[in-house]
Amino acid sequence: MKYLLSIFALFILSTFGFSQKSPFTFEAGYISEGVTNIDGGAETGSAYLGMIDLSATFNTETAGLWNNGIFYVQLESTHGGTPSFDYIGDLQVSSNIENGNYTYLYQLWFSQEIGNFSILAGIHDLNADFFTSEYAGEYINSSFGIMPSASLNVPVAIFPRTSLSGFVKYQISENASFQTGIYDGNPLIDDTDPYINDFNISQSDGALIVSELWIPTLNKSGYNGTLKLGGYYHTNEFASIYNSNDLVKGNYGVYTILDQIIIPENETGSSMGLFATFGYAPSKINVCNYSWSIGANYYAPLSNRKNDIIGLGMHNAKFNLLQDDSSILSHTETAIECFYKLTISDNIQLQPEIQYIINPGAEGNYNNATVGIIRAYINL
Image (cartoon, rainbow, N blue to C red; front, side, top):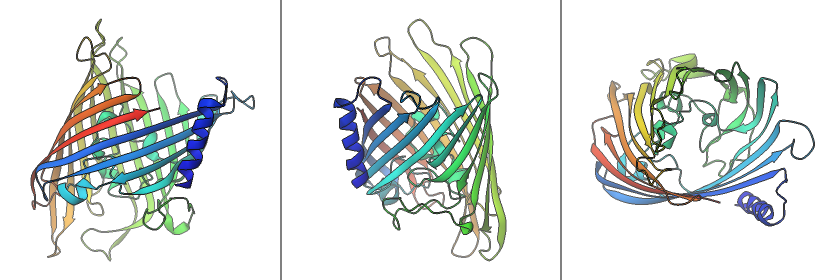
């Protein structure tokens, strides 16, 4: 909590005490969310979730120091229930802010641009720059963020457990780039370090190395698109899912992400974007063998609602789960999400939605779940 109070004080100073040319930029946001498991899953029930997000940026160029340097700090505080754990039983987690009650340092890094290169070092969320889809990012189900074929197989520096890292990006052309990063292989656990401020590097942690190539898909005017080809490798030893005594050195996965405009923006401001993702990891040592998603977003669906979005997406993941009799059950869990994102003002958005989760838990123990979510975004 001391971090939140400090950054809040800086936010107040930014509002009342800095000029428009200040090198400091401060942002504050709150996500408020109600989740109800209407039917199916482990049991019906409702939960409230919330997240405070505070950040500060210092621009070295605006400060008159040197060009293209950025210092960034971000603090978060999550609170409320855990509906996937308590009610739904899904492995992919229906809400991407579900975390329980924690206050913590989330990111703290420095970045510098040098010609076509940019470098970043510090405490960083891998999913801020890798495994990202512009269109899938509008969805609330966690699997539309980083795919479970990575996040459930190896320790990954993502919300809410980030880690020390460094990465380099090279801008090949205006629309093509390559980036690679290395992350501490064992992000901290909330229960042992609730403020997530004890960052150490240990040889036993190993390292996670991830690389990604971005290339444009079409040159036709209005049909902008990006194809991302990526892969990761974790240097630690991993146990076989068939025999915990059988250790394998290293673990890896590959993935691809497509964002594509399929209906260009017209005179009313409407347009449609499609996304598709696929991730694969070897089945011998990984709980999630593969995952894929597909979906489409329709922007400005009504002539008088220029900033609204309608989205429909599906995510599927295959899980290999060890049973009590030492056999392996291979089954899929599928999440279908439909939302309408309503822009109330420059600072407030409301997103009601329905998720239908097929085979939650991937073991056949629960009926398909129908989940209702209402989320509000408030930004200052």
